Length: 398
Image 1 (cartoon, rainbow, N blue to C red):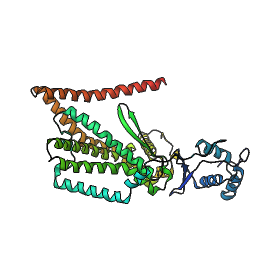
Image 2: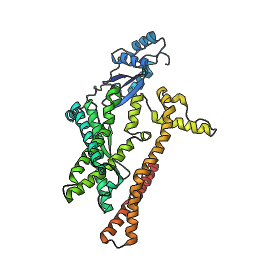
Image 3: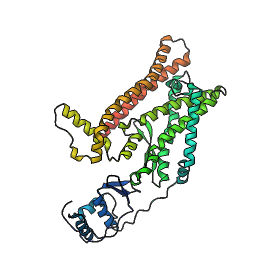
Image 4: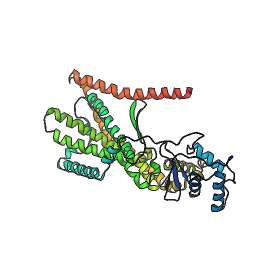
């Protein structure tokens, strides 16, 4: 570190409540749970920070550091970095008081050992039901629970919204169970409604406790698929009205399955990606892997490397050597999944519409339905393109 310096007035710094978590590689994650501001420090930097938090004036902490580690430290610069992170309280600023967390009791119930047993039992019943009746196994044919394709599009879109909300709410509740101020918000990407979960402070808890919040959404998706399939297994034999409801349920199961598969496209920084990063103890594996690939492509073309490996975290650099290969394989897997899942459904729907329009003798209802389906399909792409271009224009003006 740079040469020694002292705090101007040598007064002890005042800090907000900080958490320290020792990582497996000897580094220490330090931060504020209430704001989600965290930093990874080397062991000596964390020791110096502990000294300052304990009330030692900067000059005294600097002398202790020099005696302990045999080199000087610019404690003023160090303190300025801590202030920029929001760790240091300003003049007259009171210590942040954590806001009371709601839904913690529900969170403890939903992620209790008893709930885990019920979850396993639910999955077992789901597997048994599909073994007895293979027609319950999710497939694209379940999307077409009615001949009216416009009804299929609208029903599946609206039906997925609460299920996606459940997925994100599970992440938030799992965080609340650990005392983290997790939040769930609603936003949009282009014209799509999206739900987003913020798990402030997750990196500040022991690694073994991070797995449930990271996987809570995936567990919820599996539970939803199991419950809807079991409902459909019963309802499809209870009369026309419930049989239609069973068809809708199975259609939602198929779309939920696609969302589960999407989680394994880890190269898109999904839940599974964050699980991998947590297990392997990485910091920014995604960026490092992309830069490793860029360097390899540049080397193959005989060009200079665009990225300096010295800027990578050592753990990220070690993992990215093989993870970058998985990223390429992941894109191939994604294309395969799209071709084998969404493409058959699209071909079926398009073929049905073309036959209706060519035939023209299947009644005005199906003809209007086909036109509405085309309007939804083409209009959705056109609206997305329009909103994208509009936001680009606004960004350029800004």
